[in-house]
Image 1 (cartoon, rainbow, N blue to C red):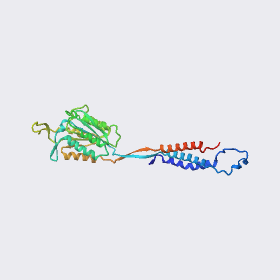
Image 2: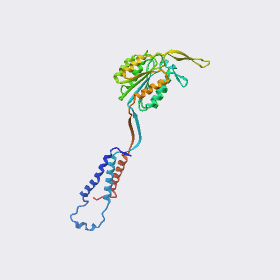
Image 3: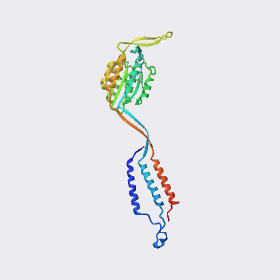
Length: 334
C-alpha cells in the first residue's frame, strides 16, 4: 500500500479545529419562546445524542474524502530495466561465399556464417544492458531485428538467419552499413556503434561503402569492421555425392576488401579486425566488449492498482446514512 499524495493527509489536522469552531457557534434554536416559563415542564427531559452521532458521520465522511485525495494505491508489480546507454547495430553478410568453411572448432569444420553467429550470440549474452539490432545483407540489405533490449527475441532472430534466405549472389556492403546506421539515426544514446562483418568486396547496391562511412561520421556513429576469412584460399562446399552423401569442396580465393574496411573504421573512430581463425574471431568480440563499456542506467517501472474509490464510496455511504437518519429516525424539529 502506498499514497501518491501523502501531504493531503495534513488536512486531517484541520478537522478538530473546524469541529471546535462549529461547536463554539452552537446550533440554531429549534423553537423560539417568548418566555422561559412556557418550557419549565420539559427542563428535566434527557438531551438526545442523535445530533452528535449525525455530526460524527459527517466528519468521518469528510475525513474519508481527504484520505481519498491522498490517492491510496496498491503496488501490483515492479519491473527494473537496465540500459547502458550504448546502442549497437550489427550488420552481417549473408552472401553465398559465407558458406566457406575457414574455421576449425573442436576438430571439425565450421563455415563463416555459423562462426559469426556463434561469436555474436556470445557477445549479445555478455551485453544484457545494451540495445542491439541486426541487419542482414547480401545483394540487398534487410532489417533482421529492430533495436531492442529483449535479447531473447534478438537471439531468436539471429538463429533464424540462414544463407539462401535472401539473394546471396552479390555483396552490398554500402547498403548493409547504411541500413545499420539508419537504425541508430533517431536514437539519443551515449554511444552509437555499428559492427560490420563481411567476407567480400562491395559489388552491389546503390550506396558506396565510403559514402555510408561519411554518413556515420556525420552522425557520430563508430564502426568496427571485421573481415571474415583466413588468408589465401578457403574450402567451399559445392555439392554432395548422391551415393555416398559426402560433401565435395573447392578451394576458392579469399577476397576481402581490407583497404575499404580499414578506411571505414578509420573515418568513424572504430577499428578494423581480420577474423582468420575461430580463436581470433572470439578475441575480436572480446576486445570490442572491453572497448565499449558504460555504467548501466536503471529504469524502474511500477504498476499500481488505484484504491481511492474505496474511501470515496465509504464517505458517500456515510453521507447517505446521515441524510436518511436526519430525515427519519433522528429528525429534528422543526
